[in-house]
Length: 127
Image (cartoon, one colour):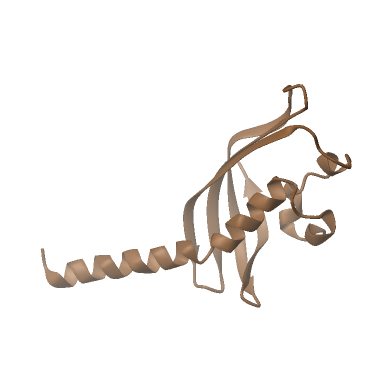
């Protein structure tokens, strides 16, 4: 293999790794929203609010269990705007262990924008 080819592949991989790591804070915020750790007022009016399930916030203390996993499938951005594709599973159980609601392997594509150093979801679609 040519040294130029190896250098190009290495550059592409390093660039993609930088793009992926650059969205870690957004992924942590999404997880916090799904797990009801973010107040409703913080997400009100933002596209991420669709994942801040208001019906679960109606209880002063949610005593059930939430199982949540999320995986980034692909990220494409120019460090200002872009897209992120994710797959998540979200299951909500009551205190007796009965399933109340959930999504298995839901796929979403989010438009993202970086403002003041922080990524935010500007639009999205779930499949």
